[in-house]
Each structure stands twice: as structure tokens, then as C-alpha cells.
View (cartoon, rainbow over the protein chains, first blue to last red):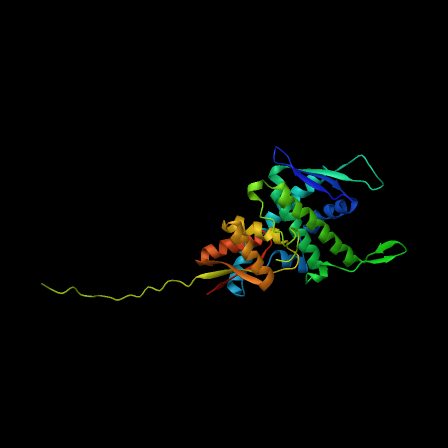
Length: 189
Length: 90
């Protein structure tokens, strides 16, 4: 199976090629996940800066509105770019999709993918790295997934795209070093 | 010749520095955290990576120490990148 590839183009845009239906399904959910996150998702995306009550109050009043606006802007960018998803000529039984992320949108995408993964994780109580490796049950040749397991699969699928965007979509001078002993997409930091 | 008079003695105590702390979470990618540390603090990749590893292995890391106002700015930038960051007085 060929995985999606991301290539930085001469104009700085990131060409994403070979997205599977699962990638597309996870991606189209990103704007919805970032649309006014509530409950655990809101708490995770907008944490408190300290235990100090006064500082938390000031933060809510002075800083959070700007953080909300930043996330809303990233969400809008992703929603707009997703309209450019293009199906490729099928070479096999599984359809594939391509997408181009403009250069000035790459950072918003990296941030939005991160936020969407966190929102999904918060909604489904992902608390440990072990939670991200669910046991998949196969029945009659098909993998059966409950809602939580499917959400975790989507967290991992979006992680793959986020890591690719960081390591292949950014200018070389901005890419963090890829360590040999750890996979670039490894979670938990 | 008269001796100079000491009119008042004042003690100036500097405000204590503040620590910016980043906490581990199981979802955020390691490579993303390294990238954020490089961008927010301007750290070289080696330092950013070392701090990220400390967050990953120890559960938290003090990533910067200094004046309160600057610490608030850094926490705001880290929150904008969705990292779990807090600040505390030393």
C-alpha cells in the first residue's frame, strides 16, 4: 500500500498526493471539530496558564479571545482549502485524492491538524499513549470499530499528515531534525 | 567639610523570575513540539529537541525562566500552538 506523499512545490505550496478515503474522511471533519469546541475539548485547547485565580480570570478576559480567533482562522483556512480536494484517476480499487495547500496556509494547517487531534482525543478520553494503539477486532474479514476506536484511528491518520506537512511541507530551514531513534510522527510530548 | 548625610536607605528587591513549564500530553507529536520550541523561543534544534525529550520522558520541563511579562507572552504563544503550558513564580 502506498501512503500519501507531500511535496513542497517551487512556489512553497504543499502538494499532497494519494490520500485514501479514510484520510479524506478525517480531514473533512477537522473544521467541524474546531467549530466552537466545548467541554473537554475546549478545556484541552484553551488550558489555564496557572493555578492563580486572578491570573486565570485575566487570561480568560484578555488572552483567550485572541486564542479563539487564531483557531477560528486556522479552521476557516482548512475549510476553504478542503474545497480543492481532487479525486485522481483510479489506478486500483481504492479511490485516491490530491490536495494542494498554499504556502501561506501550511502553518495554519499544521496547527489545525494538531488542534483537531487534541479535540478528538479529549472527546474520547485519550489519556495515555497506549490509548492511541487500540486493538482492532476483525470479524468475517472486516475490521470492526466502535466510535471511540474509529476516532483514535482518525487521530493517527491526521498525525501522519501533520508529520508529513512538518517534515516535507515546510521550508527546509524550518524543519525540525528527524531523530533516528524515534519516529517523526511519534506521539506524546 | 561636612560629612554627607544618608537621608534614606532603600532596599531594592528584584521580582522573582517565573518559570514557563510545558507538560506532556499523549497526542501532540514530538516533532511538532520541537518545532514550536524553535519558533517560540528561537532555540537551536538541539536545545528544542532536548527540552521536548524532557517533556516526553519526565512529564514536564521548565522551558524558560525570566520576567513575568515575558513568561506570559511565551505561555500565550505556546497555548496558541495548543501546548499544555503553565507559568509559576520561582
